[in-house]
Length: 221
Image (cartoon, rainbow, N blue to C red; front, side, top):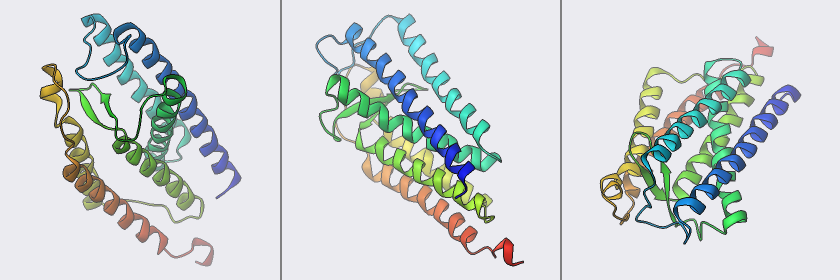
């Protein structure tokens, strides 16, 4: 990997870490306001204005990550994977900072509210962390392949598999949304759906990556 690419990855990671702290600090304030006794299910419902602001904050956070990926990437796919890298670093350090500040989550099996758009996403902490690790590895591998002149270029079928896998993962997070909206508590995580989606996305990327690795060395052509 070239020095310039290592520098780009470093600064994308720095952005993810600092954003993780900002996100964690917002959650600290929200929990002090809405959950002074500690975060737990059923969720404490605040004023509608605060809920709308929180939804807007989440949307803007994703927009910030997209912007960083677009600025750092040399092409669409590399930019997308650097967005994933920033997202993964942000997500992991979000939990690290919450653990340091609030001593939460108690374990990787602790349930969390992950997202609110378009419905509440819930799941045990290990699930988004596993996705985050995959995002980070994917981003680094794609940048490396670009540097050596063997870029990863998913084909249409691989994009379809990756998107389908992502939708299955999202579906697993939204499985309990009706009960959560009604003021209930999550009972079970749809881990078969999650792992099916995760495996499908991983398979799609691995196929594209293996094909890129077999591309003839441009320096020998």
